[in-house]
Image (cartoon, rainbow, N blue to C red; front, side, top):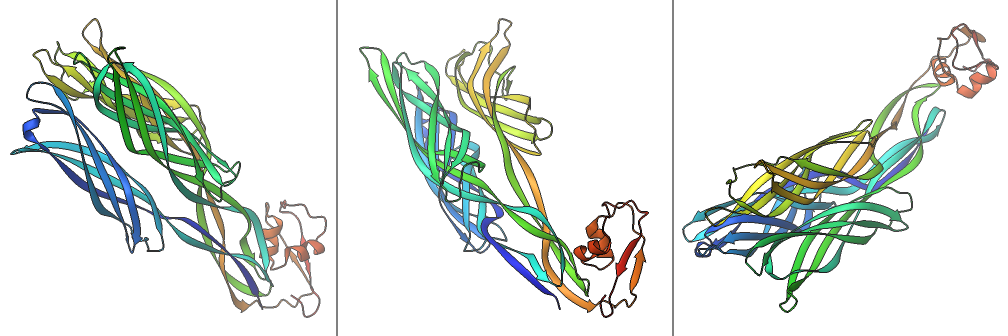
Length: 496
C-alpha cells in the first residue's frame, strides 16, 4: 500500500483586483464666477469593507477652483463632498480586506441657471487580500519521489498614516490661489519589523502677488515614514505607494520686509508591500514500483521585486496645446503638472513612454485670463535589465517660454522610479491517488536498452525501480546515458 504524506502552506495573499467608478458633483454660485480657469481635484479613501462579491467604500472629494470674477480678478474657491460606492469582484468575501486608492479624472464644468456645476469622475482601484492555502506532497511510503528546491512567493501588505510639514519664505504674497501635491517614492527598505519609506513631495503653488500678478512656486519636500510590518526583515524587497490625503497652506505676510512666509502641513498615507519568499522542498514527480499512481500538479505563480533605480531626464520640446494661444498673450504661471507613464516594456533595458501634462495661465492681449492645457510626450530607454517593469514618474520645474521666432518651448525635469520584477512559477504535486497493482515480473534478470540522454530518475521510473535500488544493480553508470549501455535488473523470487 502507498501512504502519501502532505503538508499545508497557509498565508495571506492577494486574491483579486477590484475597480469602481463614480461621478461626484459640487456646486458654485454662478453670480460669483465669470469664467472658470482651472479645477484641481483630489479624492481620499475614507473606509472600505469587503462583502460577498464587492468592496464597499467611502471617499471624500476636494476641488480647488480657480476662477475669474465679473471684475476680471482671479479668485479661488474650494468645494468638497463625501461619496459612497462599490467595486465588484467575484472572489471577494467578508473575511477579506482591501487596500486601495482613488484617482480623480475627467473634470467637467457646466452652467445651469444660477449655479456652476463641477463634476469629477472618481476611479477607485483595490487589491483584495485573504487567507490562502496550498497543499503539497511532502513524502510517503512505497513511493519514489523526485524533489526539487522551490519557493512560495507572497505579498505582505501594511500601511500607515503620517504627517510632514514645511515652511519657506517668498516674495510678498496676497494669497495662495491653488496648490497641487505629487508624491514620489525614492526608497522602500525593510528592516526588522518595519519598512522605511522615503521620497519627495512635489509641491506646486500658484501665488497672487501684491501687484496683482501671478507667479508659480515649486518646492520638493522630503518625507519619510516607518511602516510597521511583522514579516519585514533586512534584505526583503519592498514596494511603496504614498499619497497626500490632506493639505493645509498658510500665508503670513510681512509688509515691512515685502516678504511672505508660507507654511505647509501635509497628511500622507503610505501603503507598502513586502515580497516574502519562503524556500521549500517540493515533489515534482512521483511513481510507485508496486502500484499505478495518478498525480495532479499545481502551479503557483509569484511576482518578486528584484531591483529598482531612480533616473532623471531633462525634457525640452515644443508643447502640444489643446487650443491655440493668442500671439500677444503673456505667460504667467504653469499649474497642475502631472507625469504619466503610458507604456513600459522590460528586457535588456527598460523602454518607457509617457506624457507630461500641465496648464498654462496666461493674460490675454485684450484683458482677462485664460488657462491653456498642454502636453509634452517623452520616450526614454533606461539601463536596467528586467523581465517585467513598472515605472512611476514625477515632473518638476515645468516651464513654457516664447522663443525669438515666436514658437513656444517647454522644458521639465522628469524623475523616474523604475521597478524590475521577475515572475516565478513553481510546479508541484498537490494530489496523488493509488491505482491498480503492477503486474509482477517473474524473470530473475532483465536487460534494457536505454535512450540517449536519460538521467537516473527517468531510467528508474521507466523500469519501475526505486532509483537507489537501480543504482546498486548498475554501479559505475554515468548519467546522462549515452544510449549504448546495457542495463540489468536483478530480482529475487517473490520480488519485482
